[in-house]
Length: 138
Image (tube, rainbow, N blue to C red):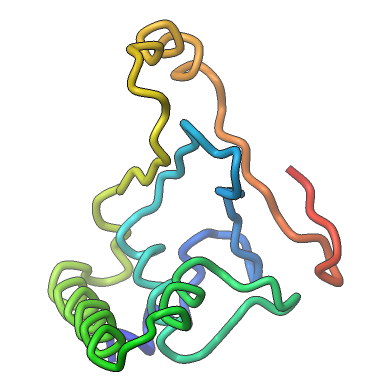
């Protein structure tokens, strides 16, 4: 029931679109905020074999396909199913849940202090694929 509800929802409030952050190098210091429901939506779609329409793939699907040994694949799948099982108990009636911050590491040189005021005031950049999937706008 939980997966059906999550998969039929619009957790990003973007219709059939899912915004993304390009974490390809150079990506030091990039971050994205996701709610638990949004992350459940992504995980559930990957486990169901749903992929991006343009064929570019996503990081979680790529990770699962790269796992060489069967034991690794089973471990990842069990972890993802356990994650969804926990969220099925925590997220009720369409609640978004906690917000998770996912980031790529920046250099460990203390420069974050200088960027703190500037970056906190800047609005996030959301990217959406354009109709047809060939280009995107940010």
